[in-house]
Image (cartoon, rainbow, N blue to C red; front, side):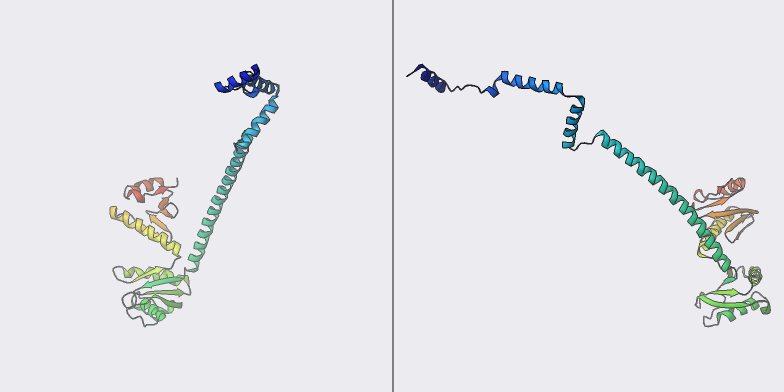
Length: 268
């Protein structure tokens, strides 16, 4: 057997084999050195491109992406502010329009009166019932009153409401003045108003009652949509849900008589 064969046999017996050129430490260091030289030769632009590819591959946001998103957010915020301003203006116009419609509706009803419990017989003609009530209870001359039409709003023996329209608003004034005779009775005569004004008047009468409980000497009256207190006018703010007045001193004095939730706000 030759010496070469013997050496090969010894290597096999010992379980050793020669290291491949790729795995030798010297070769590995040489590869790393070559990579370092290659990176060293790359320009900053090339390096940034490589980083860009790496970022794109991992779906990470770039500075440009963040700046673009910031611009879009700023644009959306600006548009949102414009929309809010438009909504505010539309809301103000809508409030003014509703107030105008309410005034027109109240004006169309100024010749109307609502009579409560003036008859116990629901089978009676409503127009003749109003005539009879004005003549016998209010002691008004029937010849001075002209009724265009009258109809039952509520028809019953225990409770009734009659809506009557008069030809002349002056007839309404005469009847309302004569209605002072009805104090202490089950009868009542009221001016006809729109639903919006009715709600306001209900709040005004509620405030009037609360104030009079504490001070009965105050001169108070509700006229249409206004509360008069000692010749000072107060209005109901439907949005704020409070009474408002222009006289700060009067508002302060009345607030001393009202609960916290019913405090009056002054415009001055």
